[in-house]
Image (cartoon, rainbow, N blue to C red; front, side, top):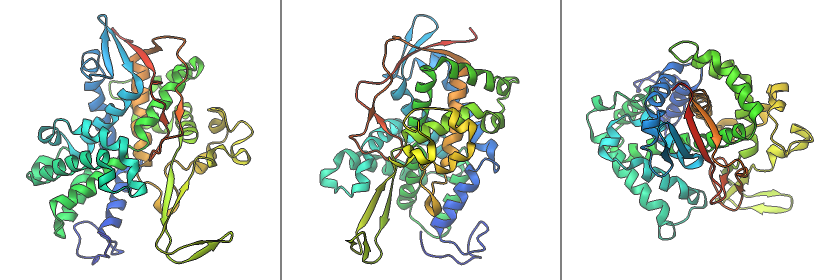
Length: 383
């Protein structure tokens, strides 16, 4: 995966002779960057949500949703956003055939993601069964998916078919291909589902913000076909809200390998060890974000959009996550669709704002404390 390639021995242009891992990253950037193939991802989002965001289908979600009366849905927001985004992203990367092979694949994914922070700490299998058991189930399922004829994978995004073809071309086994593609799927949801939850939570607790976003996105729904570009590029309040969520809910870390003995501040970092660098403190730096850095304030990004360069939720530099655009697209479309389709309100107006849990490691955005999920009532706007 990481060996340099012959520039001419590839199915897709590779003039720099990048490794297969490097080509995969480039494919992902090309697929997910807004100006390239945007309709491929966006149309899939919209088609998926057209089916899922109805009262009848929301009532089938299970533990996260239940029907109340003829038209209303009672939703556990955090649990629902987790499951919805896991399904949506799986539909993009694997299409319908994975659900046929492994009907519980989304449930297993959620079990794995809950415990996947153990991977950062190199927890051995004997101590990390809650992570390794669902991971093995997922690898087995995706390996079987790769065993299917290539034609059955045509309902996936371009990235999947492109990287599958390149991996097969160099003789990578189906099991190793499964591990590689699951890594992408895992990363794609690291920030997205939590980001949707925190964005909708802030909107539910701020009526003015909700009304401003609704007014702003109305033109995107003016025609039968949702104007995706309008959501991404011409909805500054929604974009600023997403950026402020990324800033305040970020709980990311970077991990680096020490290549040689290095002395910093009188301390020796030994070759071969790993360094974990948490980012949690950086988004609250008052010299960058102002004296109100500890508060949620959408106005800061409306007044100074360039501040988004200081958001570290997706890492930075050469290792910055190529899926950051995918995450923004998925989150902004889902938030816009939910607000446009439903009148959303707290079941109990005395519910407190969800409490963050800084005691448990996560790979993306910060988690919520147990039993602080929001219970939200949904009523369709166009009955």
